[in-house]
Image (cartoon, rainbow, N blue to C red; front, side, top):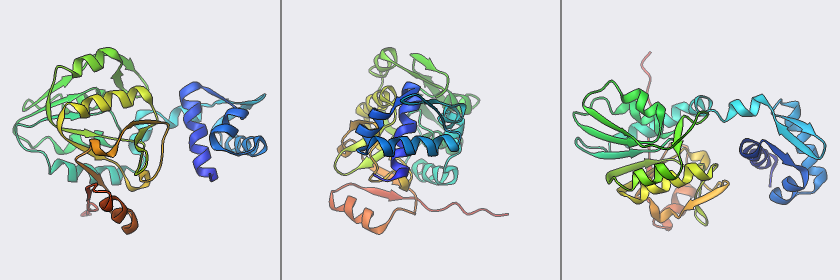
Length: 260
């Protein structure tokens, strides 16, 4: 496992638990404890963690990396072009799910010209973007508020979703692989996304090309869950052929042309 992959796993663990131990890193990344210590030293130099005896704790830099606003800005251009392609699959009078992912969030800017839509979500930014458009009826499911992710989670959220049915679900993921399917950095987020997808007639997974053949913390579904995957034009031809061979439909979006 290369350093970049180990770095992501270490930061994910810090984001989830607030601290990490060297033996945990060594076991999870399948490296020696000497390599784990060296990784922590490199990450401390970048201001991403604070080393402690036997491990490390989260720094303010890591906490900010995982905030909704910061993540929404990462690969923003690709996320927007993916969402523009996804919006072309929506029809007037559709009932749609939008999960709380930072890719799917950008879909809202393409919904405002529809004459009639119903949107069901657990995302506060989605609600905020659509609240002033009377032709769009927004349904915010209940649950426990996660301020950092600006979304609602938990058993109450899952119970609320059981009451609804949607034509289409637009969901995100942290990783996608042929062997393990769809995965997320966060277990509670994954449970809500899975519940949305399971009660929709069509499911569209929106993710940029960097997430293909990347395995994240928590697997929440097989690829058979989705109708299509929508990604950007930087996905490689070998990957497209691999997924096509496994009967997985991939829709490739076009770059957005700016007229300055």
